[in-house]
Image (cartoon, rainbow, N blue to C red):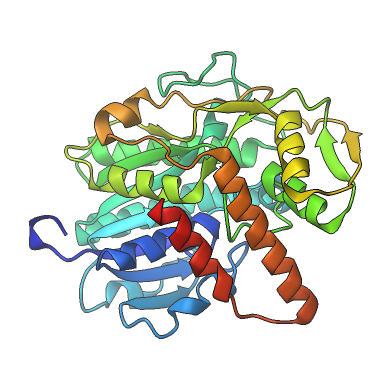
Length: 345
């Protein structure tokens, strides 16, 4: 750790896809980590490999509620708080829009107050959804967005915008030292097969031989960042000196259409699945591509894992997941080998 200081981190939403990878990375660099999750979308199996880790602890709770006393009574106060707690895919965050909004607003306030109390550095994972269906392309942090503030995605889009407001208000008032990451589409092992995101949908449908669903004509674009790259960006942002004082986009600027993604997955898996087109969801963005100039300049960060390599690892993981589910097996011996292989390249 910098200056010989041991990092004691709280990761909310740590049983989720990105959060569990972040915890692994923090532990690997010597940190002590407490994970707080309500298991709304996170999964216990993402943390099973940490059961015997002495520097890891788990607290089941919801950040919307009063935070557990256990967090404040810890022997060592938190030095860093990473807030990843919120359902992040449209089917999940729209299932309970009130809770989604409260997680973003009340939950973030509760954690900012904890950071203030413990003099901990606070990182909020915001989202590219704050840009809505953008009229500026690619999207720089200075773009204020084109968001439907009363649509079905607003609970998440506007909730994250409000969370950013709270974070920077605490910073301006000198109440907390904050960092804000705007995360673009991220994929990799430990995604939920039912989360409704395009990579998990297409890969799982292809592996199962089911029809592959494409919403609209497939010309809408996305930019996909592999999870190990995203975790590195989050850690660099948290450790950045001085604070950027503004949000930082984290994502992969290599843009492709959804149809291009589907073609890649079909070639990769060798599936005989048919493609079925359905209407676009309401307020679905037409284009999405991050401008990462700020992250490059401030953090020295940019993605390293190319899409083909990331899709191969993701498809292998989902294939293993489907195989284990069919057999009722919980162990994941292949996952750590996959992730170690990617990290070493």
